[in-house]
Structures are given as C-alpha cells and as structure tokens.
Length: 362
Ligand SMILES: C[S@@+](CC[C@H](N)C(=O)[O-])C[C@H]1O[C@@H](n2cnc3c(N)ncnc32)[C@H](O)[C@@H]1O
Image (cartoon, rainbow, N blue to C red; front, side, top):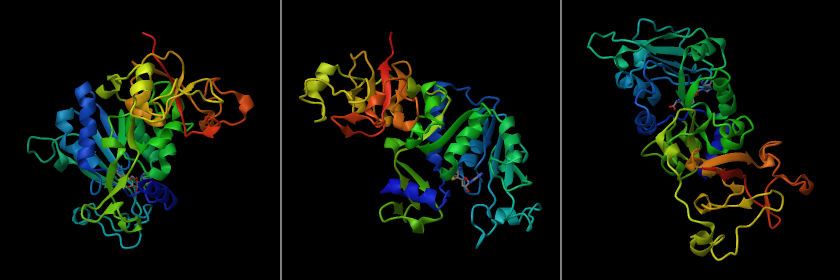
C-alpha cells in the first residue's frame, strides 16, 4: 500500500515530502561516530531545502559548530515551480524582511548561507543564516545551482522523488561526496548499480526497518492508513540513504550459519529440510532467497535479494553483478543466454531482482 504512494507521487509529480529532524540526526551521527572530522572544514550544499520547510537546513545550522563546517548553503525551489501557485502565502519571516520582493516571491528560488556569527551572540547557528532570492527558480539543473554544487564538498538532501536518477547523475558527474534519500529499488537502476559494484556508492546507516515517515502538505491524496492525520506523516517502505561517505555499520560482518546448518535449522521453509540450495536454470549461481540464509561456507556465486545491500560489508563480500533484466551485461557472464529469459528462473519460476555476490577471499 505504502509503495503505491511512491508510484502515485511520481505520477502526480508530488515531490513535497519533508524529512524528519530525528531521521537526519540519527543518520549524520552514524558518519560522525565513524569519523568525527567528516564535516570539518567542509562546504555543505543542501540543494532542495527551504529552511521554512526543511529540517536539513535546521539540523546543519544548529550543528554548524559541532560539525566544524566551513560553510552551509541551502537553496529552495520556487513556489511556482512546486505548483504552489494558487494560494501560496509567503511566510511572515519573508514578508517582514527588507529584502521581500513581491515580484520574486513566487517565481524565484532562494539561497540561504551560513558562515559565521552575525547576531553577535558568540555562536554560529540558525539565527546567523543570510538569504536572498536566486536569479532563477532554484532548479538543481540550472547553471546557477550547478555553480554552487561545484563549490561544495558534500551534498546532502532528500531530492525530488520524481527526479532521483537525474539528481544522482548530477552529483556523480561533479565527483562530490553525498548523502541522499531514495527508494531501495534504485539499487538496480543502470545508472546506480555499476557505482555500487565498484564501491563508489553504498547504502547509508538507514531508516528503522526501511520504513520512513515524511510530512507532506498534500495529505488528501493518500489511502487510509498511509497518512496519519494526527502526526501529519506519510509512510514509505523501502526507503534508504545512498552515500559515498563511510560509516561503521558497513564494516560489521553479517553473522551467518554454514550451508549445512541452514538446511537443517533455517527458519525459512524454502531452505529448511532441503538437500542443497537451489540453482538457477539460467544463471550459474545458487539462489539464496533471504539475506539471513547466505551460507557462510559456500565459495561460489550466490544470488541474493537487493535488500541484502542494507547488510552488505565490502570486507565480507564481493559484488559480482546483477541479473541481466536490470541491465545488459550486468551478470558478468553468469547468464546462459540460450535460455533467452533474462529474469532469474528457479524450477522455471521467475524470481524477483537478484544481486550476485561471493564471499571475499581472506
Ligand atoms: C522530497 S522533497 C524533500 C524536501 C527536503 N529536502 C526535505 O527532505 O525535507 C524534494 C523537494 O525538492 C523540490 N524540487 C522539485 N524539483 C526540483 C528541482 N528541479 N530542483 C530543485 N528542487 C526541486 C520539491 O519542491 C521539494 O520541496
């Protein structure tokens, strides 16, 4: 049910979902625990973040000193471009500012910058943010925002769901460090998987059990049980952080049983009581339908669900490829082309997307 939200959000181009402060805090703390200097002296760009709505700007401004940032820049997308044309009301904060410009408030994006103590209270925080209107609407693809991207060391945000592929390519082409929210299905996109395989992108610390709750001003569109009117939050499943910044969970090996013990004691009926793990009809690999059923003592290639990546440690496993249905040549020769079917087959039954992995040789 919640997944169909993402589909309808894409169709309707509803990109107004705001990340909760505590989710941002928990994620950032995971990188700081691993490397306390990770943000030290860095310029951080939040390219889809209006502080009037977004907790990203609030979090980084309030923690500017603790993280020892050099500069925080956040930019917002124009209300007109967000389809807020009708009934848009600039906030009191904007209207009471001497810079307020009626001719720009709807059509232009804004830029918010934080570098030093302006108020003179001896600390650098949210109150020291300075802002002005952008020349354009704040589209991340515009030259104006590209220049800010090129100035930044790290880019962090929850980008528009409908533009996730373009947004990620936009960061990758600039070779920046990043931390962005997306749907787990993006793992097998042809633009994303090669980066994962080559250890240039991985999953972040993550939301609890992959469930993320975002606030949205467009609540009416949701099915019952998905939107909670008491909290104002919409639930999405399979949401994760994509990053190229290291964190500790990524180096914790997954505890596993041997193949023999899995076949004897597994909690999954698909494994327990069998003589051996099944092999695919059309790929030279065994099928491991659950991440917790990966045998600790199997030397060959294993096909695992994409959710494995949430538990992936590059110290423990090597990623070989993915099924051909995700992209041509993705399976690194494991696919038997004669079968014609590129989706993985077990006993002639199609199974869902798979990633191929192998234990890393010690
Ligand atoms: C999923 S929301 C997240 C907002 C905020 N980052 C947060 O997490 O609270 C994505 C935001 O990107 C904005 N947006 C949509 N298209 C954009 C574009 N082409 N360039 C910049 N921002 C865009 C949307 O208006 C929306 O506010």
